[in-house]
Image 1 (cartoon, rainbow, N blue to C red):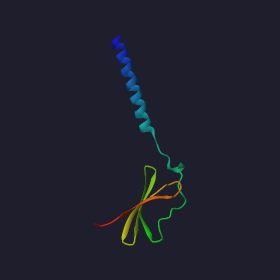
Image 2 (spheres, rainbow, N blue to C red):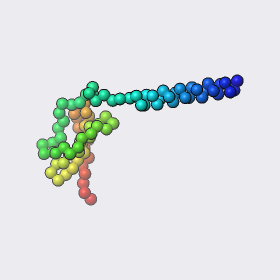
Image 3 (cartoon, one colour):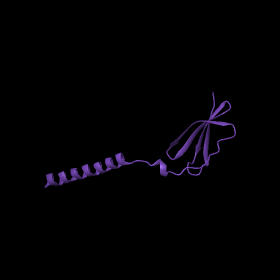
Image 4 (tube, rainbow, N blue to C red):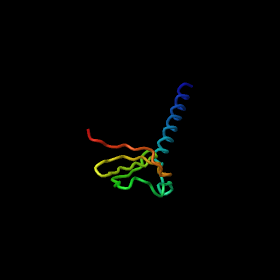
Length: 89
């Protein structure tokens, strides 16, 4: 009886882990259906160096004259959430 119940429990663990691995490997994000703002204000003299989306944030690296900054935006609304200026020390 102990052997039977142990085998059923092991089979249950295998089924749960198989379902988790299936979900992880079958997930495909569809960027075509993602909502993005039609325009984003980065500043009048800002040159966009790089842009990427990470963890639901649009990260934009800009150069303004001799200064460089990382701007964080909400990709759906285009609202600026934060700014990090890079300074030499």
